[in-house]
Length: 392
Image 1: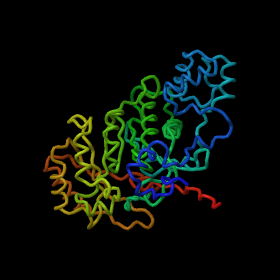
Image 2: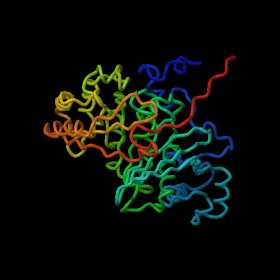
Image 3: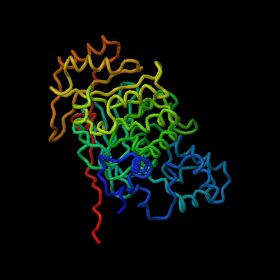
Image 4: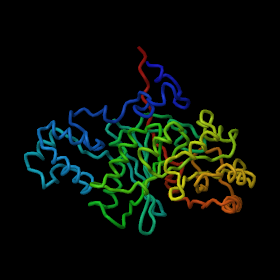
């Protein structure tokens, strides 16, 4: 076993493992490694790879544009649906390429309208994703890893050890499955019920940056799904080396899981803080390429009774954020089985919010959605486990 595979996933060293965590899941296999039918998976290929795959099959490059349109604008699930392609080509594509959706193990509907999918990939591993609807729009909360690299102890996902990264196709397929369920094909130009994406589900997106970036670039492509980068938010617990890259290459909205105003408390809540403490994290946020008034960074702050919710904490938060175009999302703690915390009282949350608002930062208190099906912020988890290595 390589040194990178042996080390504990909660304390990946920057010098050797951080790049591997982004590109290859710390040496863990991706879902595509498990496909055994020999067909090339097309979902998740970038434009160049997509076109070169068609060329290798002996097709002119313009076929790639037609096929892309069918997959990401029309939402086709089989090659047989692609009626603008010659019948012989559809047969050849069916034999050589794979556009299958993953299976849905369970679909739950909350009493407040939120939906949660438990999605199973070809290797049997599972993740959850959630749609949170509003009256005429909605956000899809998507996962980037099976389990999580981090061990944030207020988060249910943090109790599930990292199994592996999702590949770009598995990330996109969460979006496609949600569109299938809600019935939003062909891609609507206006009035989408999936109007926004938040990379806030299972996993730390910046520890799987390459796959997340490829998936989001495909979702933003103007000839397919065409979702604006301004409607996409990526949430990180603070993987500093990739924050700047996220801004430069994707330009999406950034959300930072802060949750505390001093290193002592944040070390307990968000252990990655031991590696990237608050001062360094906020300095990185000040340099974020999209950190302008029109593109404020969102700081997520879970409200934990008696832990981080005092008036003094609120005043300290205002001081910390000085000079950063920012808003603060105050998140009522959403309980889960065995959780070690309680949610702050309603009065305490409003007092905290008033101080932050008076300090010049918008601080709405998020309305929890999907609590009855464990679909609210911090409640996602699957039963997937990393396979134990056989002893030789």
